[in-house]
Length: 113
Length: 115
Figure 1 (cartoon, rainbow over the protein chains, first blue to last red):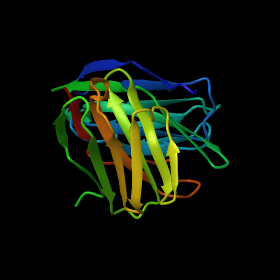
Figure 2 (tube, one colour):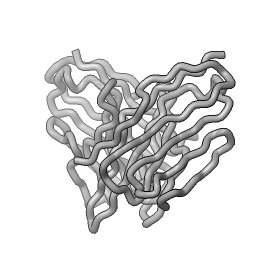
Figure 3 (cartoon, each protein chain N blue to C red):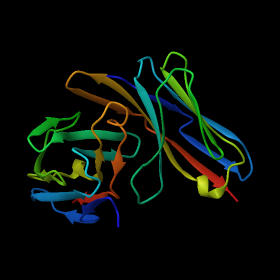
Figure 4 (cartoon, chains in turn red, purple):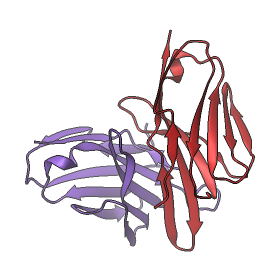
């Protein structure tokens, strides 16, 4: 069973601060996704990273895939209350006829106005 | 209109009752999934289906069954509900294809309480 460890589990910061959340595993993934989930809703896909070392930006959010494709980070610049939510990472491994997508347990972010 | 819909959104049922959760999608995706989410345990896969004739067990399939009635419809049944099946249930879809086959599109969830 592949495990994805997310840290920190909880994060409470003031509006305008920067933050980084991490997603780590001992397994190699063919791709890794980040989702954001708001209360009462399903997770929404933010980004997929595929190549080791890849960096993708989505407005104030920067996603990085580790060189060895075992870990990833999400950095938020100048956090806003609208960034509040549960951030989930999910790692995919491909195999003939098989399906393996492992979710981390999430980082719950609260941005205080 | 939402691409992935789930009914009901909330359900309270008693131990031993049979219950069905339904999922419909207009994304045209072949692949559909059922997950449950519990505090502290994250999202866990119950069943998945890569097409109408393909059904596979996930990590925690015991106590659940599924039916893929059409490309757009995937239902989850609890044959005899028990309290530890109280959870938030999500349906998801994904496209078929190397680059996007793992990107999940989730419904809004069903909050199920078994008393």
